[in-house]
Image 1 (spheres, rainbow, N blue to C red):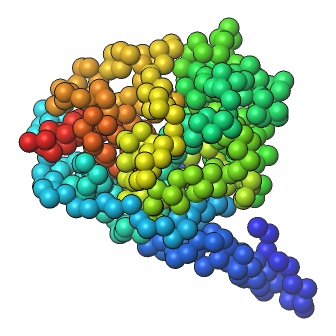
Image 2 (cartoon, rainbow, N blue to C red; image 1 turned 180 degrees about the vertical axis):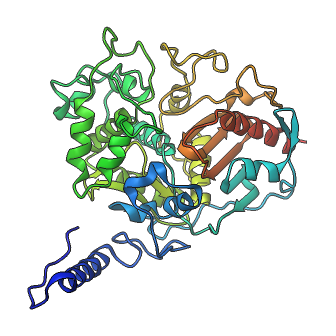
Image 3 (spheres, helix red, strand yellow; image 1 turned 30 degrees about the vertical axis):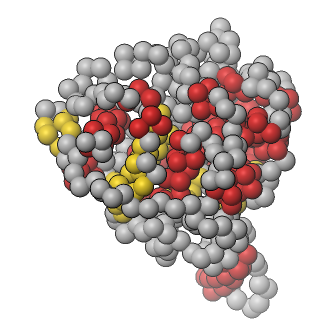
Amino acid sequence: MRPTTIKKSFTGSGLLALTLAVGLAHAADTRGPCGVPGLEPCPQPFDKVLPAAKDMLSWDQDTRVVGFRNTYRLYEGDVFSTHGAKPYPLPTASSPLKEVSYSMEGKQRGLADYLASQSVTGLLVLKDGKIAYEYYGKGNTPQTLWTSRSVAKSVVSVLVGMAVKEGKIKSLDDKIAIYIPELEGSEWQDVTLHQLMQHTSGVQWDENYASKDSDFSHMTQCEAKPDPYDCVLNLVRSVKRKPGVKPGEVWSYNTGGAWLVGRVLENATGMTLAKYLESRLWSRYGMQQDGVWHALVPGKVDMGGHGFNATLRDWGRFGEFVLSGGQLANGEKLLPDDWIARSTHWTTAKGSVTAAAPNGQYGYQWWYNAPASDTDAEPKQTTNSDKTFWALGIYGQTIAINPAEHLVMVQWSTWKNAETPASLYDEQAVFVNALSKALTR
């Protein structure tokens, strides 16, 4: 937002200071006391000094703590409200988790080791819908809105399922250009929604978080600009197809494509992601606190590739909703009966199958996550560990769901690097397996 100019007899730095002060005051007035129009009460802690959004990929770990719990203020945002609904109960388990044991790199580790190794700033473990363990670090609180990074992709996947059940999206075999006419003539025009959600579009996209010249880095810079929508749209439209690769043949993780999944949903429903989430789930399931979705155009276009900001317990409630197959407390089903099974049917397109994921590692924006086959980590498996599916975001954001064991784990983290070393993902998988054993004794 541009600062308001006041024409008075000031010169030089005096005029600049007054202009900036008035501009900031105007921005505060229009965005409200919590930094987002319509958001009340303010999440806690409410940090006074915020890092620059454009530097997100290069923040140090301490800065990332402040940045991630204030991401909802760093960009324009759309609120998804509870509308005062009574929170869905998350009672404390009668036998809370006290310790957990696992091994990594030849060393026996416990709960404290995991919190330190993973740079955990929030951890919630739900067993049979009850809180077995809850932890907040680095000053975070139960009122903190933490950003999801790509965990939001899995949230959008669930919303797509709702739109399919409602008939707003006719078929996942529809070409996405039907819903997004701006893609006609681009490399995306023949991609189906099914292929888009499985990230098998075949369109080239550099997701390298460590490169300043990657497509993802350029998207991050677009998002920090005053008018981000056109910048993001032009970036995503401009990418090329991998030579000789047809849609559906090759799996390649693609946040640009995930943003388009959100645009399909918004155009099909006539609502922003935030408003659709609010009207279908947030106000009806009984979430505890209003959340914020990062908006490129407030009230019109939200960021489908990331941008979901909510409390730790509400992340957990979302996990419980998915674990139930998409059922409200009154028994109403919001998802097709087979939606979760379809969402976790892993693509076997080239690049998706690995030694650790012999049946594929990606579904409808959900992950299969297991320790690498050559690691000495234990426990590598439990009886039902293959039933666990994962929402994953860079720097360690996680929702792990195992319907067979009625187990949900939510994790907030600030890893030093976006997704390395890979052993951190191994450790998450091993830890969830260890939780499973510890909570079924």
